[in-house]
View 1 (cartoon, rainbow, N blue to C red):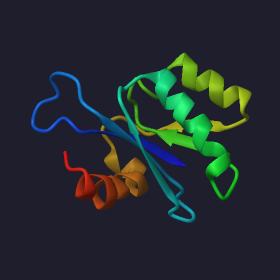
View 2 (view 1 turned 90 degrees about the vertical axis):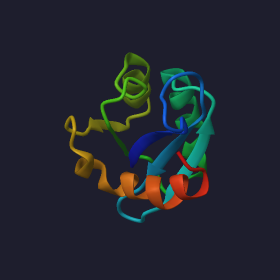
View 3 (view 1 turned 135 degrees about the vertical axis):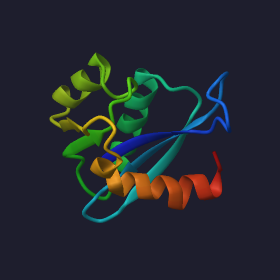
View 4 (view 1 turned 180 degrees about the vertical axis):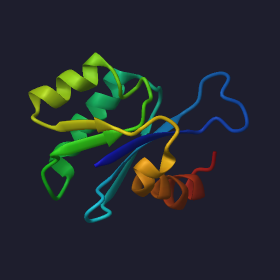
Length: 114
């Protein structure tokens, strides 16, 4: 699954604001969106852990961008322990995560905004 985090900060990234964690399966286009109060590795991993049993298929891989909420020891340890393949996109290549980026716009930003 491609995984991304959408910030709902408006025009400024200053201050506190909500985020939406978006997970999209590239084969079926199944998408899960979950609101997060903060952008932290532990919260992201906890959310993925809670979503896994709700998916209609086994979670065998996670592909993320290079955000610190994904590239950290907490996420890597979780993926190792759960036998989930972990990959990341190349820096500054939005097309590497085209499926989840499309859902960010079509679902999250359309319903919630920026």
